[in-house]
Length: 119
Image (tube, rainbow, N blue to C red; front, side):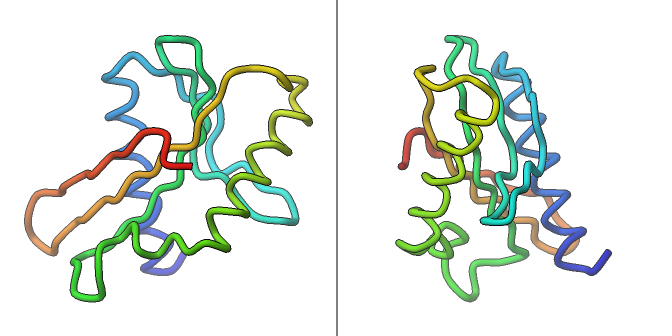
């Protein structure tokens, strides 16, 4: 596993803990099909399916982590969420797509910028 993969997994772990602390249940991690991957799938305490895209960086030197979500990436996330709903027989369930920006500077604490229903 490369350095970026380790950093990404750490960011996903931190967001999963944040969500569980809010009463969410994580039901899937790194769900993958040929068209891409959804980092986290959860059920909120309001029983809403939540698809979470996590972007993790060590700094914002190259911009805010959420700036990495281009229009094409957003479109792909929407298609992936719909594919998950169909393949899991959850079509018609209420859902939303959230994004989390995790910044983990070297040698210090982390920061999570969590945004609900961005797509």
